[in-house]
Amino acid sequence: MRFLDVDWISGPAGTYWANDTSDLYEQLVCKLERTCGYCFPYHTKIARRWPRPFHDHCHCEGCLIVPGQRAPLAFADYRVLVDGMSAQDRAAAVGLANYALLSRGIVEWHQLVHGDGTRVLTLEEVVSRNRLSRAALLAAGIKPFLADRVLEEARRTHEELARRARSALNARLRASARALEGVPDPLRTGSTFKPKPR
Ligand SMILES: [Zn+2]
Image (cartoon, rainbow, N blue to C red; front, side):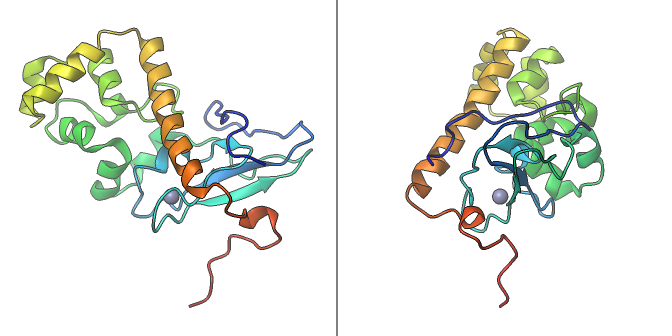
């Protein structure tokens, strides 16, 4: 089976996805220790097959969901997840520019997470939703050329910005999938994702 035959699935925070199809699905589970910002957006999301590992030293796991079965974890509430994180993990989880806004007191933590808890917002979304000024971005240490680009992007509608956020995540997944093309899937060849003894 090729990767990403179907798009990945998200849902309201706290709800469980049930596999009412006749296909195998997979829930992505991040370790959430020294969180990697690359993988974090996909935590608890569902796909036919995740192109793991996403990068070197990626410890994300996949849990198979057979037809008729419920996903092992509810869709994560990112507001709760980030509450329990160290400063370093938070920076990785929300991105450096978002974290800079947070650490300078320009936005509060909840302003970096979508109101329904399902995901972390992009910098453009944070700027748009909070009507941040160029001065605020510069005060957070964001370089002028980046600030100008972000302000231009942030003029789009919320819906368009959300669509672009998702398509950026999809583009990343396709890159991971290309790198893994032809590699057997451990979840579907009998072995499990348990760490190897060293
Ligand atoms: Zn990972």
